[in-house]
Image 1 (cartoon, rainbow, N blue to C red):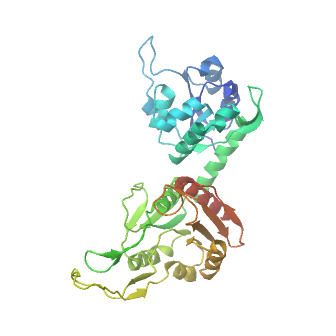
Image 2: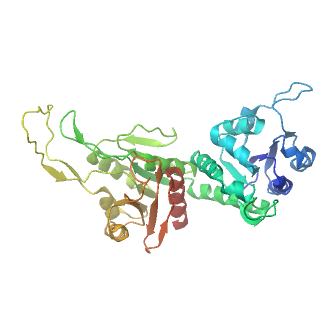
Image 3: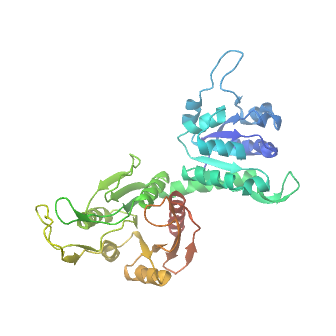
Length: 396
């Protein structure tokens, strides 16, 4: 998995820095090209000479050399790397990454990197558990960085608990597994719907809902980052998306249905996260309706159930739906999964504070065809997208 890949290893000032030597050796053994950036504190724990010898490349610490003025170009370093790995990552460096601070070469290079970034924290138990550290961890996760969680064990302070740097072989295996996920989805065609639909009443008014599209857009980005060929059918939203994703803009439920039917046949995976209107006005006025009477009535007709229609047409596709419930959540979601011939359903509950429409966070329960339930804690929609993607990969 790592043969001929460019690995940029960042080493921070921690007692666990000695493990960077073994990690470097394993990267080189796997056939990777390794360059190393150390913080000034890190060289107090392990010498640049050791890591330069193992990596077969000069180790970089400063922005430039005081002797000859040669500049260590952080932009070029960030663009060179296929993967950036920070191990060990201290609480200080994680805080810098979370808040965009770049007072050293490592943090400046991090801000320039376009590649996946793996962060392996190492610190004492109380530091790891501190609310500020966990807030920063969640923040860097929301940027798309991948955390390699620390182990539990004896710590340098003498305490016993979480905070111990993952072992080098564990870090290698973790990264290889993530690369394998990308290879598994490379070439797969993924169809995703997102956002609300607007059902016109007249040329200036519509019936809609509060869906922001954030969940669907996060899913589109995650599948794209995993190597998939992604088509995103989006209702009205102001969100932006990676230019490599094929975005189809629609407004009404009928337009979303037509777009889905057009792309569904060739799709391998379909994730229907859009909040599609269940009803649409029977007639749409051609001119703006004037405010004349105290009462105003609109006749509605049912829209075609897109998810059910795709479930009827499904052949080779994995079909994933969403359910937003307020009562008997699990029972209703399972019934919907069966009735619409789904492989997986993502259950949202309006009872969960901080979850649902408009929030940047969500809390969901994944239910598969065998009625296995996996419930998440409240986390960012980017992290929820990763969970959903990983579940679908396991189904593949």
